[in-house]
Length: 322
Image 1 (cartoon, rainbow, N blue to C red):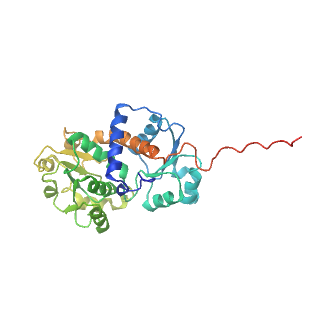
Image 2 (tube, one colour):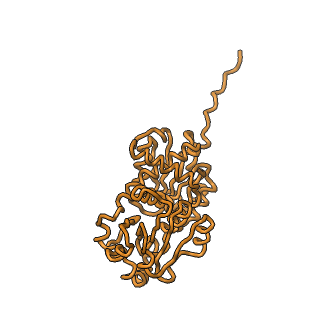
Image 3 (cartoon, rainbow, N blue to C red):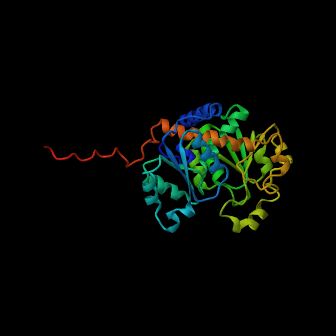
């Protein structure tokens, strides 16, 4: 496994297999000393519930020490560069988990730091979410290769990671969006380079036909609040996931949502609270999979016990010889 996890495309199939095997073990045996003696910085520019709590609890359950850093209370808010922050943190901690507004912030941090940087969300991707989601699909359906996942909504950071990781795992990924809200050509090209594809539809009913998984996300993501009225006009009511839309799959499909959900907008209560909904199992699996990512990085030798730059103390000077 590479030092940094910035994109779902950073992973090889063998990495995913190892992470899922570790996650299975950590579900059965939650407490370990795998990160004993190590601190992990949680550097959050964007608000969070699930990502923050699952990483904080996960690091603690592995015997490590989570250090939560809000951007607004660090020197980043007063103009310190990302590079200087990264080079400082590597003197204190063994890894940086960063949740940021711009993906290039992660890239700059990873280039400057000699310790792992893990993407806990950026404007382009959310690889930890996608890893946990496919782990949940594997748990519920017993397989991944050949699974059909239909995403209803626009090409969010979550969708981007689902599409990239789906190509690696042999999942057929579809998306239904209003015109102008679909995936970029750059993303589709990246997915094809990985051996997969993205099937793009305007009609949600066509997209879900034969799907094993129906997935949606909020229509107004963080930073898009000024577009709220225009987005709701574009997406509603056609792209709301309803019981009727779920029935169009033609099989007993599962419903997924990365949360938080805006009930009544992208999904109706009857679907969120149905037997087909696995959204809270998704949320729970974030803990196991993210712990597995950290353990895998430790096993690969990327998470050092002794912070970089802090070698053994120099021996005290000897007195004059007599």
